[in-house]
Every structure is written in C-alpha cells, then in structure tokens.
Amino acid sequence: MRTDADSTQTPRIAYSISRKVGNAVVRNRIRRRLRAIFSEVLGIENAPRLAAAMVIVLPGAHELQFSELRNQVLELMKKMEKSVESVS
Image (cartoon, rainbow, N blue to C red):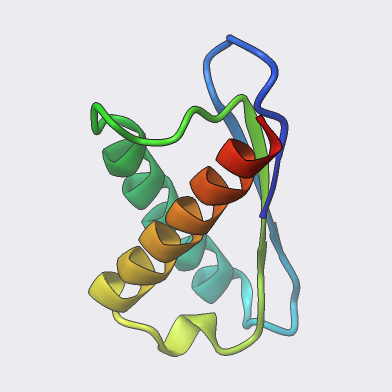
C-alpha cells in the first residue's frame, strides 16, 4: 500500500486487482469488501490520515474471509501510521 499523506483532501483509494486473483466476479467481490473495510476504518476517529492510497491485491486474497481481510487491512494501517510518524 502506498500513500501520500501530505494532502488534506478526502481520501482516495485505488485498487489494483490482477486477473491472476480470479475472474471478474471474484475481483469485484474483493473490491467491494475492501471498499467496505476502508469506509469503516477511515470513519474511526483515530485512524491514520490518508490522502491517497494504492492497494495492490495479491493472488490468494479471494480465499480470505471478510474478518481476515479486515484484520490484514488494520495491520497495514498500523504499520503505515508508524512509518509516517517516524518520518515526521
């Protein structure tokens, strides 16, 4: 996940989901799940500030349950927050 934390605009998130992940139905299901997760996570008061992010989905993601995918996104957000704090 790449971010640009300098902007103060509404967060923009792009998803890159290769055909290696699955067919269109599978890729769209993953995209919908990620949108739901990010809308929930970014609504949390102490969530890291995001201006823009690129999420690259790897093969095997379709095997994850929603809760597992959510936990992975939360872990990534925590790592991102720590890396942004260390740069500041």
